[in-house]
Image 1 (cartoon, helix red, strand yellow):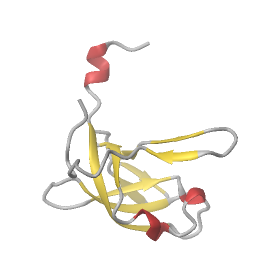
Image 2 (cartoon, rainbow, N blue to C red):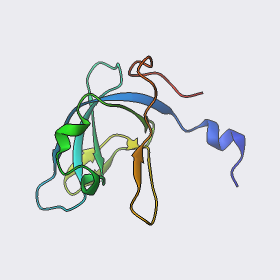
Image 3 (cartoon, rainbow, N blue to C red):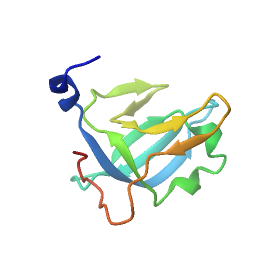
Image 4 (tube, rainbow, N blue to C red):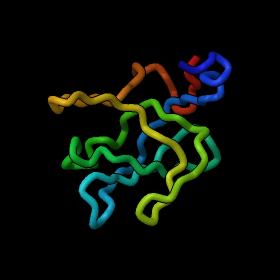
Length: 109
């Protein structure tokens, strides 16, 4: 269990995927460019390639991301956030997507 104060430190925002591409020589990683209504898009590295054989399927989707994590370099690519998704041991998978009225940059409450 964590306290409410600890949870309140996590910044969760809606982001619109502008581009998505497989990271060469990896089985799991995709490099996403994501609009959070900031000065420039952020690069996010996510291990969801198995669920998106054609990464272009992600372009245009608005999903939820943790946006205040420290940057992390994964296989030589800097990641500036974390995509929210859920999966089961049976292979079911889903992105967490707000409805279409939620613009990029909107903070979860």
